[in-house]
Length: 142
Length: 432
Image (tube, rainbow over all chains, first blue to last red; front, side, top):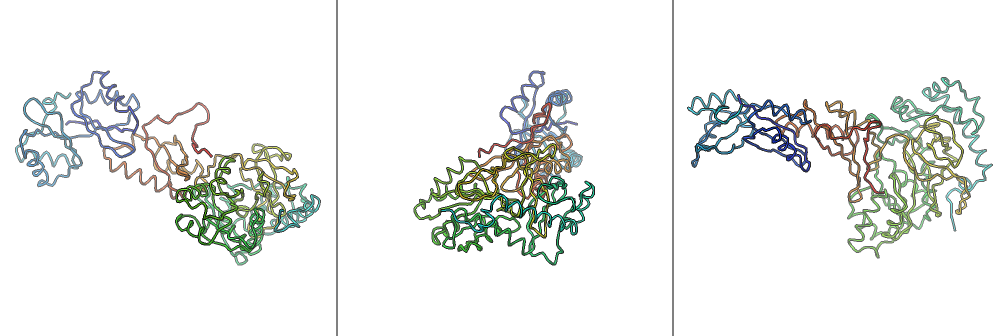
């Protein structure tokens, strides 16, 4: 299971920089980053190489966060690939809460990170369609 | 030349006034003892009976009343007359969400309106005037009080209430309003609107009666310049009657207290000890003529100074300075009383830490209220919609508690300064 770190972001100058600085200082490598925001606050969503350690460090520094299980799917880098995948997910009756893309790998694939209402159901849909979930190892996550 | 609405009271000699107060206080204590069991119990607890009160010199023997008492006795516990004798209710926001409800007989309404009529007359109002009342009408005492006073003076009364600035300005211009009654911040707003529209020459205002909010001498000069009128202060509170408990005269140097109806004392807020005139302390009022809501020794929590220095207007009524602050932490925002404890209660109920900060500001002459709240691990979720829902629920509960909108700002934990001693809960940025 891949966990994403979801962190409360106050709308304040420099807060993002503080967090990335903290991770950098501790040698943590970020694989993906996404931000959801309102006018006054936001949620920072990151995938890092060492989730547990990063979470501990961030908490120790006064941040509020939760670990959110996400599903990552590799998508061929070609037209309509994502569209096809989303159609399959929709047909399978899985609600996508949000998604974002991961930095593309060297293998010609893009990676999509999905947060869904029912991750087991998504796993079933993917399995039924012969789509492999991306593993931690593939992304270099611990 | 100064004119008076009721010169026999406004210009009475000290001896006459004291004799009147003595007589009225003795009668009022008897009335309260016989009709208000809540206060009688307080007197008994202190070992005081009406026989101990022979005049104003004995006032200090009576127990105090506070807003807590109004809450405990809500809604009928402090009534001095049966409901059938009452003709009106007015109300204001109170602590812990319960409102202060004040009852009035026709006699009480009359004396309250008399007080407002004195205020209007003191700023030069006569039956020739057009009195434009832009205080809110309704439960708030502002509109009702000045409206009644304006009638008594015989002014042509425009019951405008607050808001709808276009209509305010149109009536002001078309009907030639000469006196305006509203909050000082609304006066500033009207002044700017008049300036923007180039209406200044068409406005005939000569006097303004501005109260229900804190304002400064700078604001007075600014409003006077912009509106081309003389700006006067007025003081009051629903518990005691409403606006007109005290009013400013042409001298514009403090407000005359209508002491034939309300005896004022200044006490040390910590010890409750009565302080000599000229000393800064908490203002306490005893209503000596009101029937339905006859509060005795009610602590206003307003800090001010009383003075009996001779006034150039000829009135002998004692004068109070503008309130210089509060002996509690009450804020007045948009004319509404706001206690940090009310905000704290809502936060705790919704599972937020009691570590918060209240930021009050004035933007475009209108007060703003912002509550900074720290996010907690329990309340945080990866779902933005859920956080927004929680924030909305907090805003709704605050509105229900306070009666006004408060913006909620969610901040990261530990960002609100925790000081060693007393927490800095309130940041008032209003430059009044």
